[in-house]
Amino acid sequence: MADDTVKLVLASASPRRLALLEQAGLSPDLLNPVDIGETPQKRETPRAFALRMAREKAAAAQGAPLVRALSGPVHILAADTVVAVGRRILGKADTIEAAARALKLLSGRSHKVLTAISLVTPDAATRTRIVETKVRFKRLSRDDIDTYLACDEWRGKAGAYAIQGRAGVFVRHINGSYTNVVGLPLYETVNLLTGNGFPVHYMWMHGSGDTLA
Image (cartoon, rainbow, N blue to C red; front, side, top):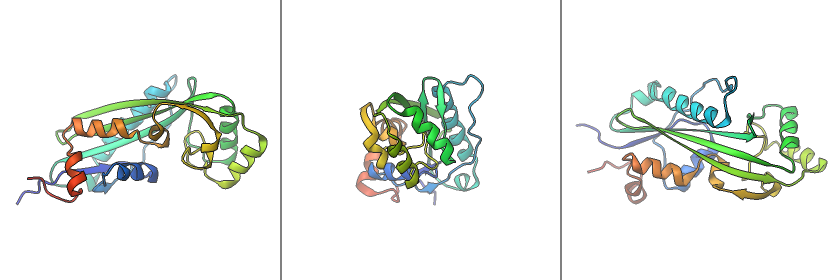
């Protein structure tokens, strides 16, 4: 008997993206993070970089053995979040020195947070969206920076901060989607899924494990 259960794959290891999807009433059937190079190309803009990363993550997940083994219609969702000051991309901080430099750069000024989402549909089409939010930080004191670095929330975060954590007190103003800054813009993500045939409202009623009639 054919399995016509609609599947959702999240191509991310981010607990924040998973929590946001679950907040929207969607539980992925499979988490399939991918390991790809995340170095910007020469003269690549933050927007182009985020879009390329999201597309490459979705494509890599599409060819992953666990994803290929799934039966029935499969939607693959990937995302990439970039923090930028002008054309300068602030990557994921992996050392305390890199985190300190990022926080000093963000202090007292506005920056952009861009999240690109890429969806591979069951018919192998790729759909993308990008969302931009402007965030302004207060001027950070030395104590602000030193104590934030000590709490370790910066590690592995684009721009060296997580708005949903202690760094939320640094934010003077936000213009745009809050969930975008956390890592997955829910309005755009759910609309992208719905517009490409994923039964979001059915999942709200019945959960992700049921078979559609």
